[in-house]
Image (tube, rainbow, N blue to C red; front, side, top):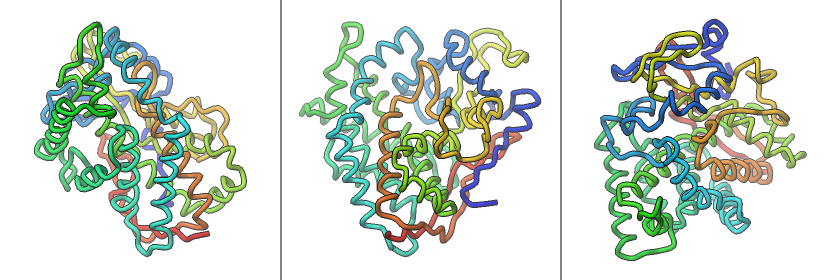
Length: 385
């Protein structure tokens, strides 16, 4: 199997029953595997809620490492709309030309600094750096602050053995508390200050609400962006003609970005808590149990995607759910898309070939399934054009 290949472990179960089962810290999860069921359930917030105990809809559950509700991620309508309307304009800023220009300079400068470097750590010294520097633009804070986030390492909530780690998570929570206090004392033009000066339903946001937005912003786009970048590097290393194709047809870079998100599905799944006894795929689901929306499986559904297990760079019809679906679609999707588009364009301009020198796959254990989500270690060399 190629290093850049991502097999579909859900295929048989998706075809047979549409369901999978896994245990998550003694709080079982019924996984929804079909595209239509995932989208239908994501849309039905009354029966399948996000506003459960903070951390419970995340898989693995974070109820033991935080009690702050991520906003608007863990809020259901009608309040979800109020919060989302408040923050969405800020998260659409990556569409602005000045933002794109700054992001392009960051990414091009980083590639210039590592091209032709032997044995590059594609995760710690490239993808993490790229993601952290780009986040300074999203928050509108000084570029130098990215060094703090880089020092935390790749996983915000995990120890080296991948177990959830409350002490490590507290590094992020304590940091955000401190930054909120700084913004209260000296308001700036960053996201902290904007939130502190904002109102929802006539009331100023509390510090806890601001913290909830910031935790989501930091945690939601970290591992996912890193996975997308490193998986794309591995793909181009083994498919050099694909890099040539995008060099010759830059107009399809947007299509390629969506296809990589579909194929790699950087986030495997997200949970919902059942509010009343119901049925999913004709199977009973009891109130207060959990289901998951398995984006990774839905994105390989053969009934929706032709040649679902292949990367088709110029795929025309691509209703993937790599950024979620319905009212809870990813708030940071615009930022992530710009990162990927600019990153791919920069590779076509500056890099002639990529070689994978060493790697270790990151395999998720999901009950009966084992899914490759990316790499725990990836060493590469990018050769200049």
